[in-house]
Length: 394
Image (cartoon, rainbow, N blue to C red; front, side, top):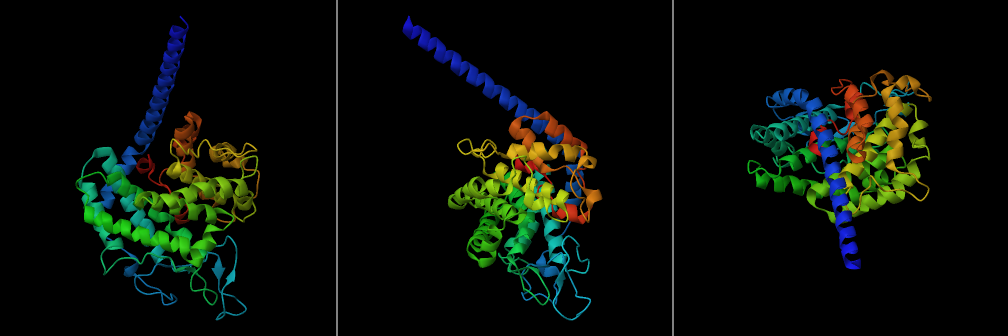
């Protein structure tokens, strides 16, 4: 009789567990379907545009101020301006104020590349039509394997400052745009239509870039940044490591989230003090939360789920979403200083809300996301929106 009770109890436990698991899958599937339905029309329209585009890489334009060569990515520090008292001397900083005369052609080319691959891969996920893969391959070859047009796998000349630095670690944030290129490839990878030799070449490029990110002084500087720059180093490095199968770097990034990023950046109320003290506290708070949650989306596994990770004092990533959601739903309730630029353009359909809805089965997060702008036009917002095609992240 005792054995029968044990068997019955075990069977009941298994049945309950299966029931909960089934319910969880149903909720997640429903949220994914809602996200797809929200984005379907826009995605297919963007993919139709992408099908008509020809590759533009870093070799298309150059800047005489760059210390690099034809294949080197080059950008300039956003908040650095000519000194009115010494026009020919080193630039001076004006935090939060973007200099419109900076060289941005390479940055724009990379953002465009990200938009093209993100749109084509998303359309492939929706339709299964291999024409999107074939179109994507043309751009992937141009950027990563064609010796005439490829970009060198480093960011040695990014966010330079005239008269001060030929490049800086802070410039590494520019390659967050390559994350959706990688995610797009992962979405297309299983298809026989994808050229496996090209795929191997792209993975080799990212292996080289990961080595540079983790060994060059610029990479180490950026890794140790105490604000969104440190988060973004970890986010993109984790994304590229997952694509290339670099388990050691993946573990390093997961440990860094738990031991450095979350404990050192998040306050008990879910805010990010390092971002709140900037001249654009609203935009930077949103950006850092997006980066943190994207990192959780990249790294979480059943055995190491960062969505469920909690510090000894109770802080966790969900608190960050809960803190910011009311201000995303109605930014007029924002109790802190307004941003000195682009205040009117935030928020948009922030990925933190979509990822959070999926991770926590929270329809309220998703409802807020649905109501926001899914097709921003402000260049500053696009540059600081690392996830623009959520379909390729699930």
